[in-house]
Amino acid sequence: MAFLWQSLQLSSVPLQMLFYINGVYYIFYFLATLAMIVYKSQVFSYPDDFLIPDLVLLFLMAILEVLQLYLGSKGNLTEEEAPLGLSVAITVGSVLLSVYFLVWQTYVLRADVVINAVLLCAHGLEAALKVVAIAAFVS
Image 1 (cartoon, rainbow, N blue to C red):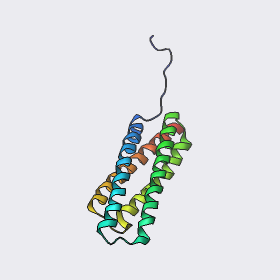
Image 2 (image 1 turned 180 degrees about the vertical axis):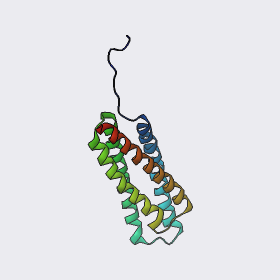
Image 3 (image 1 turned 30 degrees about the horizontal axis):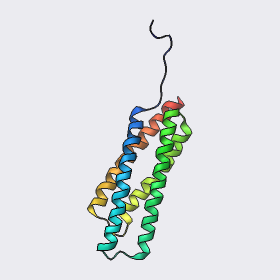
Image 4 (image 1 turned 60 degrees about the vertical axis):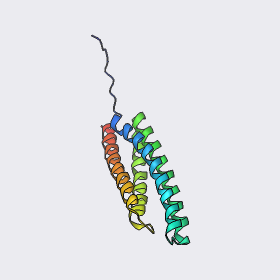
């Protein structure tokens, strides 16, 4: 009789690993997107009316990313539904901003398409794992 009680751990290890990977990837994404915006503003006739909004949206996206990663990680580790649910809601905002940088920004380079596609796939997988974790916490 080695164990008198069994600890039931509901937090998701794959989700926690994905939070870490997405955090590292987002740093790359942010720096690459910032560099491409600077590049496009120097090489192409980037309208000044669109340069500042693109930069503001990129920094807003960074804030949303930090919030959703923090709340998601906290919710997963403490096995609470509310922070994870809020993280899912914030992920929707990040996805919309990623779609903006993929489709609607002034100039879209092939590199923009690749890094945004990877980010959107990561957000989709992360959202699915969050929903599964929330379902495990509720039951």
